Length: 163
Ligand SMILES: CC(C)(COP(=O)(O)OP(=O)(O)OC[C@H]1O[C@@H](n2cnc3c(N)ncnc32)[C@H](O)[C@@H]1OP(=O)(O)O)[C@@H](O)C(=O)NCCC(=O)NCCS
Image 1 (cartoon, protein in one colour):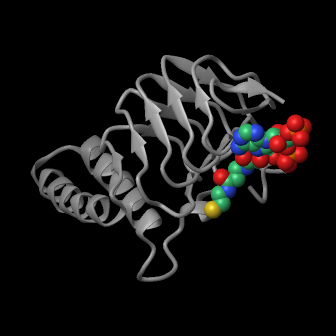
Image 2 (cartoon, helix red, strand yellow; image 1 turned 120 degrees about the vertical axis):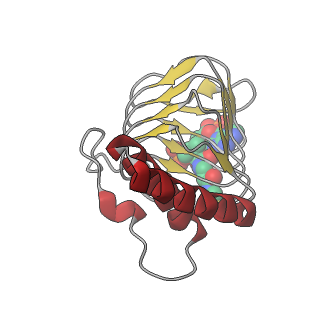
Image 3 (spheres, rainbow, N blue to C red; image 1 turned 90 degrees about the vertical axis):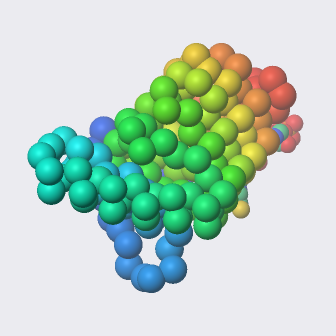
């Protein structure tokens, strides 16, 4: 995880450039964009917004299929989420994701998992909620996290332990 120890990444101020769509083939960004646009239209309400919701729900279905990922349309995700190698990512609708997090491939957030800001989750990690992860924490590849992770902590292994 290149930027994991980079405390310059904010845990509170979303950096929207992290999820900007800059090319046609960017399944992670496009999946996220469908969630963002769906949620924005839902908040606006009204007949046109309902149609817009349907349009982005279709896009969400397409990119979810491409990425083989399940990120529910109503999941609370703060800005700046980076989905690096977006495949097989499963996020429970009760999960909450703070600003500027990074999630690698094959990660599962099961149940009420609450990520703080700038949390980086390595490939294949499983977080089994309910649990909370503090700001700037790092979850190692293939870790199975079953309890809270403190701010700035790095955890690895099964069950995950702090290093
Ligand atoms: C957890 C992580 C961030 C720690 O990085 P780090 O701070 O540089 O830690 P180190 O590499 O110095 O390792 C420290 C110790 O933790 C162990 N360790 C590191 N990552 C581990 C992991 N995922 N699972 C089990 N043990 C791990 C190391 O073997 C080492 O143990 P030791 O002290 O007994 O020798 C990193 O190892 C990691 O898992 N990153 C995920 C990267 C990823 O998923 N990349 C996908 C690219 S496609």
